[in-house]
Image (tube, rainbow, N blue to C red; front, side, top):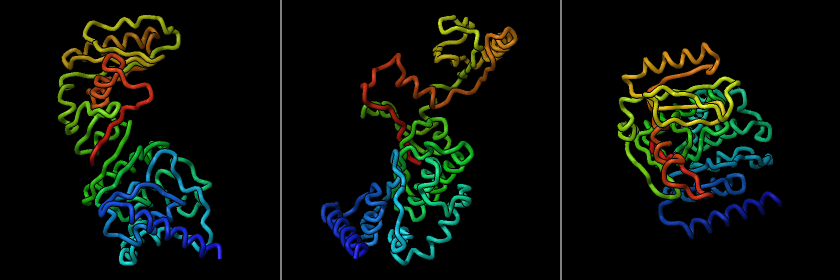
Length: 296
């Protein structure tokens, strides 16, 4: 009797959503553990053009009873079943999560929950897939695998809209991106287009020695500009032609113990991001966050 009442409730909620929704829409959220979303897709698969099942703090922590042990079966029409099973296994293999495939959701980590949520979204993707911070809490190895899976999703024909603060990771897989600050678009272009202003420069990063106090001046060499410091981490911008000089200086700092290690790399989109929204530029509203919105 309880199962029948719950099914009736899910069916009624889905029907109300469909009555209020436009003719074509992106489905967001996992209401009642995803069952309402699955019922919406079952009732009107042609109206759902995309899924957005990943959002901050969202995970499937419910424990389904035996009558609802496989909610994925409710998510898509039967005609997709043959496609869904091999696709599910392919995603599990691609993300290297086979060891957790049969683990109850209550016993997996936040990162594994993120990967599971991505698989739920990507197993039979709509025309548009929306991903909100998809790599949060994911370990470094599987984070790379996840970025590859996102890129493959786009290459297979889905439109992918993602929001992320992991600028350096995102820039290698997206086609177009926008930097947003308090709802304003500060810049929008391809990764190469946005990074064009950084050509001919390098970024030097220092891990300072423990004996360097917070008020101790670093004594950067003259070619280094746009320096920042956060505790024992310091960065600066270097013209490419002066890179060798700065490397020699950094090595000297290592030898005298002022610096533990250093690195020099080509300027990236993260440098563009910091230049546009950093403390030396237009202030950001206290409760607003600046994000990178990208299209893969």
